[in-house]
Length: 92
Image 1 (cartoon, helix red, strand yellow):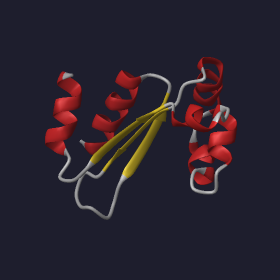
Image 2 (image 1 turned 180 degrees about the vertical axis):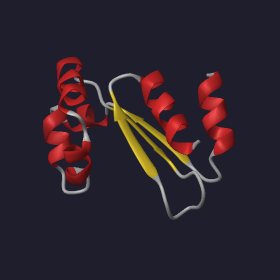
Image 3 (image 1 turned 90 degrees about the vertical axis):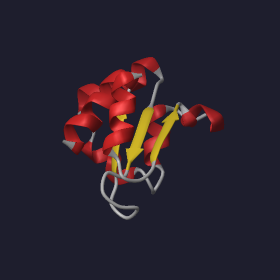
Image 4 (image 1 turned 60 degrees about the vertical axis):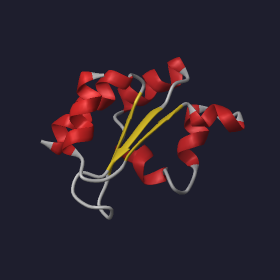
C-alpha cells in the first residue's frame, strides 16, 4: 500500500487499476489484447511477461497520468506490486 500511496502522490491526475477485465467477457489474455484499443500495447509487452500472464490467466492493467489529464502511461503485468514498481520507475 505504501508504494501505491507514493504513486498517488506523484501523479497529478488520475490512476486507474483494472484486474482481470478479460474474464468479464470470457476472453483469454491473448483475445483481450487483440482488441483494437490494446493491439499496440500487445506489441510492446515482452514475450516472457505475456507468457506468464497467459499461464496465470491474469492481467494487471495500471494506467496513470503523471503530469496532465492528456498524457498517460499504461503498465501491464501479472503481478500488482511489480506493476506499481514499474509505474514508479517511469514517473521518477
